[in-house]
Length: 426
Image (tube, rainbow, N blue to C red):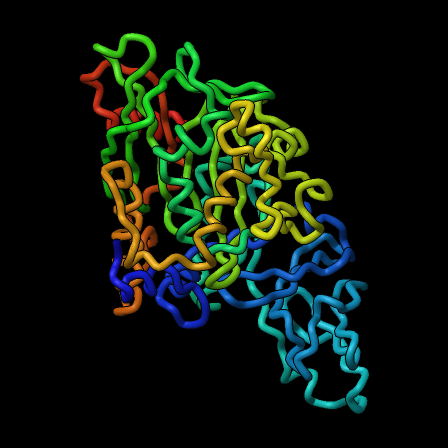
């Protein structure tokens, strides 16, 4: 458990909160490229860290991101006209380019000097790995973009699902780095099988273990931490271990151990203290599913499972469409889709968990490490220090990799992780 003070440090992500300041020292994935694909298309409201922005693609195909509120009278620019390489506020017709410069002020007298004095705050953006990334920190301290481990190249095959979840960022991250829960919550979708390592097809994921009580080991890194979940394999249990090495790359994403067809990652971006965008990603080579296939497999299809704003149709009020008859027939949760099973747990905890009262066990070692690491990191920022993962010499994210497999008991999982990292960098 955490003290109430530590829980505040961990979970508050808006305004001047230390965790929000920490996150603003990193490039933030604020939208999917598909959401703003059309030049002169509908402007997109972007919400992150308690603030709202407007993202638009101009007539030349270039992206711009401004504060949502027009600097004139604070009307929302999301409803503006995106045309002729600028975004025009509907209220009085003030028009801004992608750099926030005023192009027109039709409500002001001709020749007014106000046009040259006003500027909307513009945020640097770039497109990479299916996301639009934005720099939300100090305007005069924009660092070089470091490609994430799940998109070491911009042309790598990638499939992303997006869900708006009414839960704090930290409880979602804890779910993603919690290897122990998968043997129960996802047991009907992650099926024990006599396979050489984790495998996948269009129906299920398969694992070479029936062990529901993994031994956990963690190691802190400069970018976050990694840990091993050590299980007994179905075959050669006396001489071998089934190892699953997960990487947490602060503050936004985790690398989940891969299967035989593709790699897996999750990206969590706080909207405010009690809402987050959850992205679940498949990436890798030609065996990576398409975006449509990935969303269908995970029951996260817009229009079927989600509304037009990525909010799940399965909610606390309708019991997440849980089917008790399926449970009676052997399905463990009665909830379709791996992410939907997770979301039911995250949302059922409440919008923001009080960690001063929960009880942790031996299988929660990674949770303990995450809480300690990020509370300490937020405290350091509050005291004027740098954010975790920003100090030189930095580990390039493209060199970080998760790993899994059945190995002899004398294999050190840390060596396995380093090997996977070297292969990812090649």
